[in-house]
Length: 216
Length: 297
Ligand SMILES: Nc1ncnc2c1ncn2[C@@H]1O[C@H](COP(=O)(O)OP(=O)(O)OP(=O)(O)O)[C@@H](O)[C@H]1O
Ligand SMILES: [Mg+2]
Image 1 (cartoon, each protein chain N blue to C red):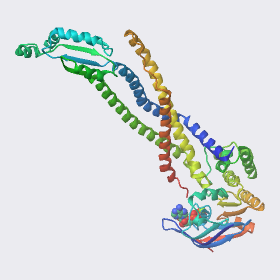
Image 2: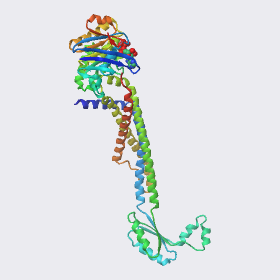
Image 3: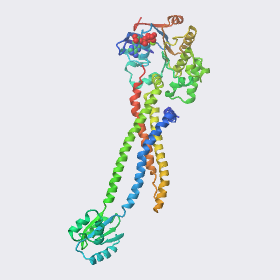
Image 4: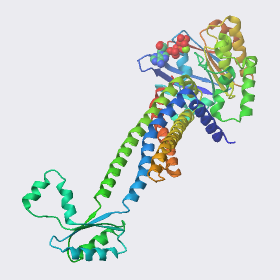
């Protein structure tokens, strides 16, 4: 599903975020990316939807070589991925419902089908009753769940989440992870970056540990 | 409905909603007022040109006899001219009358006294029509006893030159304000992009194409231009209606039924479409310049 070979990423400032990273995630897998702050977790995840480009090495996603992908092809790659960002990137000028609707605006679904999908996604993360709220009125955990709903509304086969449990209490964090596990159980490949080692240990799933940009 | 059509309808709806907000309407009004100046000027000029055309329908010819010509010869020539169907009106100006007129002019009495005789010939002033003037003048010049024929097209030429200058001025004004329109749209779109910065960034992150993101802005520029153009046409129509009330009173006192005519429908439509095109151009420039800055990372 995702495979990195000898990937290095150096940011324009000279900061070497990833060095010689190689790994492969199979279809239907759920894996964690762990590491301390600054280890390169976000950088690694950003290479998959081509938000960042590798300095060297190759990144293959669903058989597509991302390193060689043309600019015009990037939107279509991203539509097939479910992305949950570290800073969530919710829009506070519109309702919960409209936030979840955003990806469907440009994938061109019929309005009825789009509405059905949004409701289904909100239902899966337990926000169906909050459709009309503004995201600002949601708790941290609820905002995180809204970000997940928006990521899955297009029914992606690969779900990528960057620190989805940051700043949450243990219970809320567990609830979030349960959602990912549920998606994984229906066949979605899931990749989660987190620095919460304790949480990871509880699931006994595959872990890629990063240290100063290298897989340890 | 196809996805493509749905997306255009969505972009159009978004643009329309933004246009009908206060800032969008204000921009459209600015455009409308700016464009109403050249459009109004053009309308007035076209109306005046119609009058001018009517005036120059009766060009004048001055026909000067040889100074030694006898009065009887002049009268014979007068009879002959009166029978020419191309001559609309005819006036004989005896040399004494011409001299009297000239003596009223400062400095001339001394000059004439110095000459000791009347240097002026008898003359005819006749009016004809624009089509015949050149041929008639040529024919008249061949008549016996005629010293000089002057087809007086100077006034018509001056009027044409003035109209030309006015038209050029209007084009310059239109060019200037058209550029202003592009600038206004450029700025509206820039502000709109700024207010939607987050939405644009997120949309790019989750798979919106550039075309999808640009589309509502193009529509906004186009609609704002069209609305501005329509307002300009409306302003000109309203101003003309007001003006014509006063002009009507004045014209009637001269026994005329003159009114300023509104722009022909084709021209009015052209103003609106052209404004829309310029709005689209402003949006294009703004979008090309500003959307590139929003690259998620
Ligand atoms: N856009 C950028 N420009 C320059 N350097 C960057 C950029 N993004 C990240 N870095 C640097 O790359 C390194 C890895 O950053 P990254 O965000 O991938 O770490 P992380 O593991 O996600 O950390 P955290 O747990 O704090 O989110 C850091 O040293 C960071 O300073
Ligand atoms: Mg990070």
